[in-house]
Length: 254
Ligand code: PGA
Image 1 (cartoon, rainbow, N blue to C red):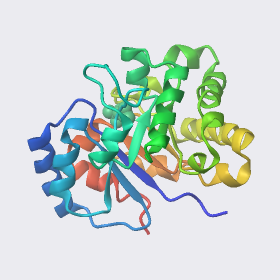
Image 2: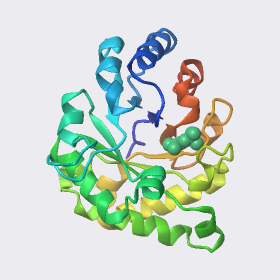
Image 3: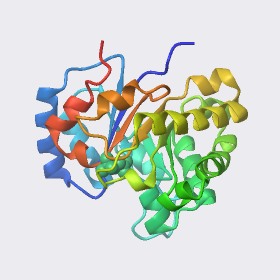
C-alpha cells in the first residue's frame, strides 16, 4: 500500500481579510510551483474565500473553511453553513480544531455534527485531534485521541471516511513555538492509525493522511515529515508568510 499523498494545510485562523488574502495569493503563486504529488489547502477566514479563489486563478491551491454551523440553515446569527462554504469555493473543512473546542465549546458530539454537515455539502473533513499538556502528563494521550476519533470516524458514511484527513495537533504545541519531537509525533500518529484501522479496516485507514500540526516552521518541517506515519502538516503562524509557507510546501518533494 503506497503512502497517502502529502497534505499541507494553511490555517489562517482570524487573520487576513479579502485584501490581505489577495496580496498573499499573488506573492505565494510566484513562489510555489504546482506539486501534483501533494495537496496544498488554504483555510482563510470564510469572508476571504471568494477573494482568495479569484486571485489564485489556479486549481492546485485548494480552499477549505475553518468552521461551519452544525445545522444546514436557520436563525443562527453570525454563523455560516457548510453549503455556503462550498458555494464560496471551499472543498475542505476543519472540524474539531482545539481553539474551537476550547473557546467555543465544540465538544465531541458537536464536532461529529459539523463533520456530518461538511460531508453532506460535499466537503472533505480535516478532523483535528490532540491532547492538552495536562492530559499528556497524566498519561492520557492515547485515551484522548481514541475518544476524539471514536466520536466522529464511525459516524461518517463509508465513502466520506475514505476522503478524511486527520490532523494530530498537540494543544501544547499550537502557537507556542514548542514542537512535538519527531518521535512523539510518530508515536501519536501510530495511535491514530490503529484507531482508524479499528473503525474502518486497514484498506480505508491506510489511505487516510495523518498530518501533524503545532508550531510547524520551515526549519523543522523536514524532520517532522520524515517521521514514520507523518503525511503532512497543518500550519498556523508560519502559513501567514508566503515565503515560509512556500518553503514548507516543498517538504518531501522528490
Ligand atoms: P501553529 O498552529 O502552527 O501556529 O502552531 C497550528 C494550528 O493551529 O493548526
